[in-house]
Image (cartoon, rainbow, N blue to C red; front, top):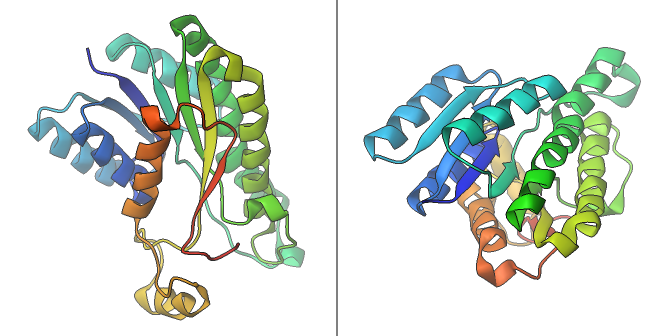
Length: 243
């Protein structure tokens, strides 16, 4: 029986690349999406054509009830969850003095709160099963808690993800559960124009923008036996940017 992974935000970008990689590695993969229905359907059909066990579910992870239903369905259809990869995360750039209450809450609702909900939901079953792996996506240099004037809400939520990751790691380490954060810098995941990415490359020590496959390599490592003693880590995938 193959291991089961749940990937949130799996229809696009890093999440999509992660779903493909884990399916190729022999995992049974469940992935959720909120709005990217066409992309989710295409990915689902692609994996089914390869006979990969896959479950695709629409889920508004800002709701604890929706997260609970997601976890319940994954367990019912595929079996106990061995790995949770939280790739979920909305992005918003707006000057701080122009930020709205709705915009502020939206960043927390779709970046921070789902990580708490889902970690909380899968941890106890993992304890009963004797172990598991959780990976949460933060952002490069979140550990600096630096001032941000245009992405304040998004950045604050990602700093919170890092705090949650370290807190859960401490709490469940004795149960053979690892909880780690991957913090990307600038990756070409399809959401930014090519000319903007080219301008950003100047500020990256590596001299180029990364790709989702760079993040996938970190995911594979943290899920591997080689990372069994890596817990509470903040692994930056940024080409040296933000260090």
